[in-house]
Length: 384
Image (cartoon, rainbow, N blue to C red; front, side, top):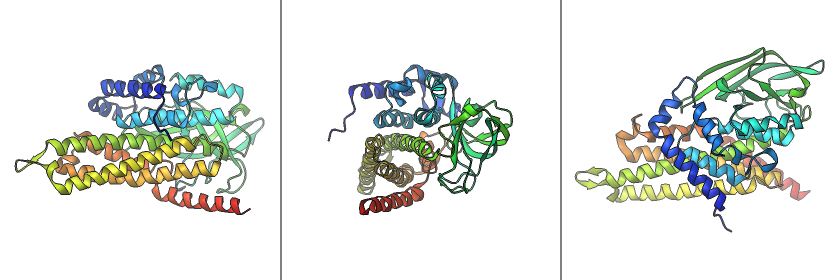
């Protein structure tokens, strides 16, 4: 099986990596991540002009990519540069609109691809522990429209978002798969309160509070109470993006550690000549290759028609990324010694990002349990 990228994807990766290395050096990134906005709107617009956002969407939506490997190429490059701009929100919200939106709603995709609209995915709530069917925010009928009550937690770059994709329960119990509806909510809607704070790995996150937020009928995305399948598709794209981003961060941490072992001397001897460190580094390289294989498998499966196979590949990749990401973070810092703990060095920032990626859209334990559950589901289908 040929795992080489197409020429177009290689060109995209080369241009994106070059742009990030020239315009997004660590010092610049650190300033952006700690800024009041939490990201640079100018850089985000430049990503759009380079076609980076367009690569995340298919031709039918106004893009020129949209496949699993297109997402993987883009986010691996973003991971290498520790990019904090809100491309994850773009791919997740865009996927939901593409899958379930009306013609009028799909017109919003053009502004997302052009970088004019910053889109944010607002699904997580307090105490849900990654369970995607647990939705307490409620939407009630109000004439032809809707009224939202509830709250969403840890929305990346929520303060600067122009448009939110919000999940809300329109029927059923709090954990039911049926009864979840999706809504497109403009950021300036009356009754919506956004409260932001810095995130531990750079950038900013926000809490959303919906206090009688009134929406028109055109805010409903897809059919009432049937948003779970669309939600699953959007989260699947997000999981793949995060796994690829983590892979890029691992590669950067690996390169930095190898360089350190080749140049740092102890008692006049290069520490890279110590056999114990060579063995640890060799093990790390093998683990990173395992992570790359998991990302390739997920990218290949995400466009398939077999839902169980797709979701198992995504959960397997997220589980692998969580485990290997923590290992890369720990080993890289330990092999650097004390300097690996200093914030002036990029390495600990990669380590923080790898740890936090594990906690986005389901951690290692969650996806292991999900992988097992999906396997049982597949077994029942075969038995039937």
